[in-house]
Structures are given as C-alpha cells and as structure tokens.
Image 1 (cartoon, rainbow, N blue to C red):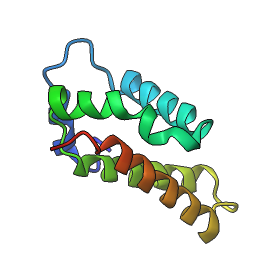
Image 2: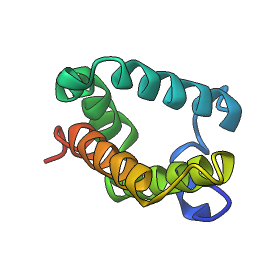
Image 3: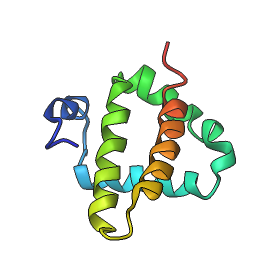
Image 4: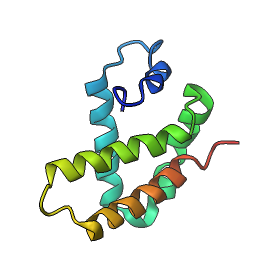
Length: 106
C-alpha cells in the first residue's frame, strides 16, 4: 500500500519504532482474528477504530485502499483458484471490516 499509495505512509512517519513489517503483522493478525469470529466484527474493531480516528487521525478512505491491496495480493498468491466468486467473498468481507473500523469516526 505504501508503494502504490505513498501518501498513506505519512500517518506513520512520526511514530517511534514503526516498521512496515511490524504493522503488516499486526494487521494480518487482526484480520485472522476477525475471520475466526465474523459475527462480532464491529465489536472487535471498536477500540481499534477509536484509536485510528482519535489518536492516529488516519483518513478512513485509506482502509479501502489497504483492503484493495490485500485482495490483489490474495489474487496473486492464489492465482488459478482466485475466481470471481472468491473475489466477491473477500470484497464483501473487507467492506464489512472497513465499515467496522470506520465506525468511531465523527
């Protein structure tokens, strides 16, 4: 995401001890956690949404950019089995996830 949409990196420039790899690990861990508990996505993202909105001041539009990048990576990693149906499932899941993480924005 930082390569394709370089302006998104500005949210992390002033954060101590930030690494792309470290943040990617946190994001993928949270996504894995949510996949295991899809019935409570909004509850699972309440604190994270508040943190991104009130502390980091991340533009909520960036979440769509990130999930689009993840879908592209999933398609690359699963070439041959990543068909339109699989794409639609991931797209719908990430739409719910983005809505959940954007809930605490005013």
